Every structure is written in structure tokens, then in C-alpha cells.
Length: 627
Image 1 (cartoon, helix red, strand yellow):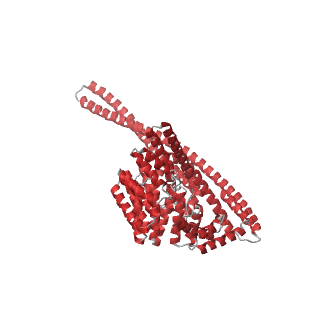
Image 2 (cartoon, one colour):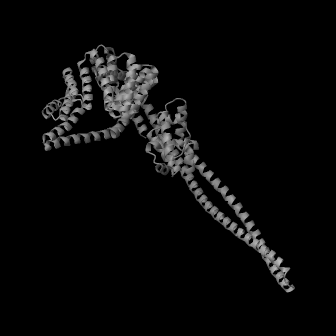
Image 3 (cartoon, rainbow, N blue to C red):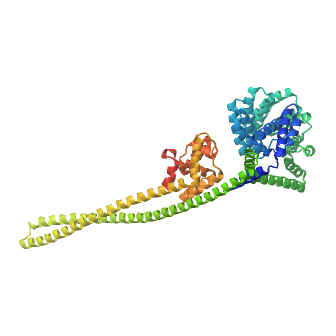
């Protein structure tokens, strides 16, 4: 329903069109900024800043705005556009731009996501940009993307993955002869070796970076290199060399010496030189580009006051340090959840409105078209709701029929068990009668053998007993024949009930399949799967996945219980839901907007939790045997 609300809002905005003059002026500003670049980057940035609402521009003009803003961000360090604007520009370039343009825009989009703290989406954006830049054979851009991916891994403390990415970036930069990037790639690599306690390799990389960056004679860059070398020596425990390089860093760059002063203060604190430590820690309280430095200072001041014996002051600094970390953790949670969700909703709404504005022609029939469209919309909503009610009614009837069949099957199963029990008892009685018959035959033969040695009177007595035995044997034979006939009738009833059970189970499976196929979400999954085979982008939203899980739980009530008992996590539920459609790995990857490798990994993990190897068949067979 929200989508239709956005459409109505877009139609009304297009009818009013209050930004027509502003949009025309903003387009002129973008053209002027493009003309000023690259001769006057500051002037170009000022012209872009005069565009108050770039989101209201069309896709083409917003893309031109974002491309120039990103170039200025690399040139003069100006801020990047909002990530939702870059996302929209990337979408436009995917339809109209070259592969290299798509790679560049994806790279800037990843940087914007990284700045907002959305690390996982940023990593996905960088991976996509890396793939496209490799296909376009732009190795310089590929190297830059690899370096930013390494930064993401470093921030997540995954130093091994970061080291591998920096090594890959270094190899690519060496093919482009960009000495500046090569030098700092060596510096990044040394920092990761230091984090992995490989100090000799770290120093080797740092000195390589020093030899390359020295040729540029940039004091700020040299200060950064010497600060990194000093940190390696400090971690290694070589305090004298560490202090020497820290002082060289201070000599090269006095503009932002706060991180180096903080490192020196920490070093002297470890050596218990409290006066020097306090001196450099006080100097580190100045302005800096690194926001983490001031947070670390609180901890160092707490340690300083503790060593000086001022326990109250040490406790005060430590409380401030803990409070800042608690606020930082809360901020991270809010950024990753509520803020990210709000940004996504805002982006979807604005993009919908803007696309509608771009499609609507400015003519006198807009209001009439809006009224007709709204009338059609109302009719469609009424028709759709009636259709949904009818489908719900049919589904309810099918569920009732299914429940009735299940009750009848339960009764048949109980009757089947009774017949099986009676058959078993009859077999036992037949066996007992056969045993008795055999025993009486043996007695009869014994009597006949004894008759020859008896007198006539005894012979008559034996004949009388023999006649009684014959009569008893005849009765046993008759009873045995009756029980055999009865067992045959029971066996026929058992086979008939077995057939009815199989028919009932087949009917339930047909009803389940029918209920699944009749649902709107299942038809949508089939349709999107066919689109993905044609190479079109067709993925399921979180709402679609939730609706799909809901209809499966309705048809198979034990489905959620089965997943929970196996220990599956919520992110693995969509793969289990799509198992009912017997899709290919490529189709699943497209519908879930993930890579094919991710689908393989999830399938392997799900089979492991179900203890259902691939040799036993598809995952759907596991569900059908237990549901």
C-alpha cells in the first residue's frame, strides 16, 4: 500500500511542479561546474553546492552531478554525495553507461557506504566494482578498490584478509607506475604485518615506503611514514628507535602532530617518564583529523594519574573513557539498525517520486490523467482485495478438507494397527492348534502301536479313545480352516486400508501443492525465476520472503519447528523456503541478491545441520519425508 501512496504523492507533486524553475537553474549550474573542471576545482565545487536538492534532478542530470562531485572529492577532498544519490546514479549507468563508468560509480558508492558505517553493504559494493574494473581492465581503479577493501578488513580487525588485499593492490599499482599509491600500499602492508607481530617484515615494508615517498618530498606524507615506522618499533619494544622516528615525524609535519604526540606520550608512559609523558599528552589535546586520538588520550591520562598516585583523577578520566565507548557502541547499533532502515525507506520514497516526475509530461492533461489514474487505482485495489478474499476463502476450504482427510487417515491408521494386531493373534492361535494337532497325531500313533499288545477289551477301549481323538482332530481342523479364512479376509481389509492411506496421503500432497501454487507470492517467485533466466534483475524483498515463509508455515505447520530443531539461523530460512520450488543455484542467487558462491556455502551449511548429505537427494526430499 505504501508504494501506491508514493505514486499518488508523485502525481500530485508533478501536477503542482513547484521546482520547475529551480531544476532548470540547477542543470545550468551543473553544466557550468563541468566547464570549470579541472581548471578551477574550487569554483566547480561551489557551483555544485548551489544545487540545493540534487535528488529532484532526473537520473541523467543526477548522474552527471555525482560524477563531477566524486572527481572533486578525489581532487580537493570535498565530501562525496549522499549514498542514495550515488546508488541512483549507479542504477542509471547500469542501463546507459559503460562498464568502466559503472565500476567507478560503484567504487564511490562503496566509499559513501563506508563513511556512514555500513560496512557490509560497502564491502558488497566494492566487490562488484572490483569485478567490473577487472573486466574493463582498468588496473589502477582495481588497485584502489582493493586498497579500500583492505581498509574495511583492517577496521574489522581481520588483519590476514587485509594483508592479502593490500598485497593485491600493491601488485596492481606496480603495473600502473603510480609511485604515490605504491608507497602507501607498502605502508599499509607494513601496518598489517605489525598487527600480525611480523615486525621484521613490517619494517621492511615501511622502509620501502620511505624510499618511495621521499622522492615526492611531501612533508605530510613523510610524517605519516615515520609515524608508522615509530609505531612498529614501539610495539616491538625498541623504544629508542621508536622515539627517533616519532621526532622525525614531528619535524616533517607540524600541522597535525596530535597522533604522533599521543604516541610519544604513550611511549614515555611505558618508560615511567611521567613529566615527558604528561607534556606530550597535553600537546596531543589539540585539533586533529583522527577522532580516535582524543578518545585514547582519556585512557592514557587515566594511566598517568594512576602512576602519579592521583586515584580520583585517574578514576575520573577512566569514567569519561568508558562513557565515550558506551556512546560509541550505542551509536553503532543505532547506525546499523534504525538509521540504516530510515535511509533505505527515504531513498525508496524519493526515488519513486523522482522517477514519476521524470515520466510525466508537462501538459494540460496532467490533472485529468491523474484523476483517471486514481480511479483506475481504486478499481484495481477493490478488484485485488476481492480476489484476495476469494483466494483466502478457497485456501480455508482446502485447509478444512486437508484437516478432514488427516482425521480420516488417523482413523484408518488406527484400524490398520488393530487388524495387524488381530492377524498376529490369529497366527499365534493357528500355530498353537498346529502344535496340538501334531501332538494328538503322535498320541494316536502311539495308541495304535499299543493296541496290538492289548486284549480285546482293551482294544475296544483303545478304539473308543481313538474315535474321540479323531473327532477332536476334525474339530481342530475345522476351526483351523475357519481361522485361515478369517485371516485371509483380514489381510484383504489390511491391503484395502493401506491403499486408502496411500490415496489419502497423495491427496494431501496434491492439496499442499495446490495451495502453494495458488498463492500470489509463489506465482511471483516462479515469475521472477523465469526473468532471472533471461538475464533480468529480479530479486525478492524482505517482505516477499516473509510472506513466502508465512504461506509455507500455513501449508506445512511443522516447517518452522523443523528449522528451529535443526538449529538454523533466520538468514538461512529463505534458502529452505526456495527449496520447495526446485530452483537452480543461479536462480536462487538472483532472487536473494547474493553470489552463487554464497548459495553453495549456505546449502552446505544447511545440509550439515540437517545431517542430510547431498548423496541422499535434494533438500526438498528431506522436507517431504518429515512434513
